[in-house]
Length: 169
Image 1: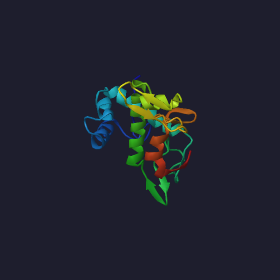
Image 2: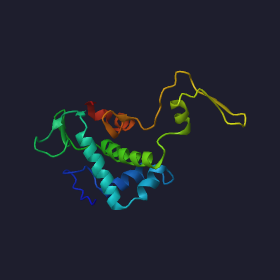
Image 3: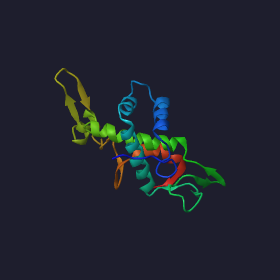
Image 4: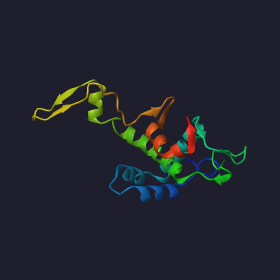
């Protein structure tokens, strides 16, 4: 799959801008930085395209309204009588959502502690005398909680990066 990114038509940023966002927000030892920089430009384009389309198709109620009814994407928007292009924090959220999917796919989906809690384990001993106890009312605490109906849209990403620009989902 080869994707041609056209800012304003099928994406809000290109590979060069995504590379800069990663460099600006992550140290070179962090998983997100390493994962992103090990991808080909084509794979980066696919991630940008897929995640842009994901957030274009989720039924989120963004603040304001489209500048033109015929524009192909949600941004730019008129908010409080000002034209607002896609905010940098929303762009970062789109990008990190894609990277989080890669992290999920490269891992088993949750930490060992989360697995124990999700299985209902209340106490764990490792044989060395170490003991871990979980609260009896512990619930599933997956790091990969998604929006219902959208398996690749992460709730924590939306809460952190989109919250200022949406009225609800």
